[in-house]
Image (cartoon, rainbow, N blue to C red; front, side, top):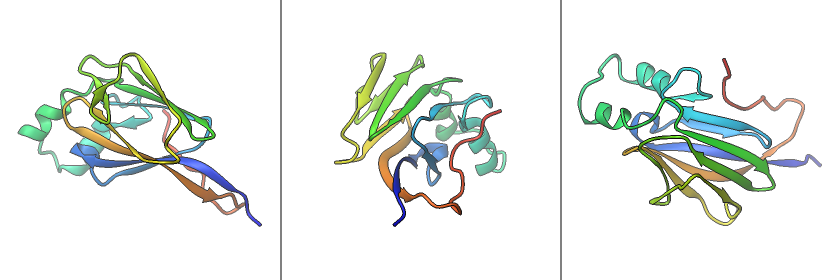
Length: 142
């Protein structure tokens, strides 16, 4: 019988990240922001998704995301730490994250993480079977 591993799934639900899915494995530390040096770079998503259109309300919201906006540490066993690194704020379920916050109830319910005024992820735990054929998941690192 294959053993199942918990993974943290981030699904973009608003902004340039809408429709994008990222899966983080236990023990990972992921930085999200506008900088290309981030593990999840909104700059790269913006450039690949809008065919060069960079004006209007969507762009105004994008500018409220810091170069390094938030750090997510997935400690495994369903526990994650969210650390706000920004000027404009990170919001967990509508409440501003002050410094950092630890979540341990993702197994019971998903949470919503908003960066700045509009870029928004749904955070949830998923189980993935551990097999030799399973792909290595995670984010790029430059």
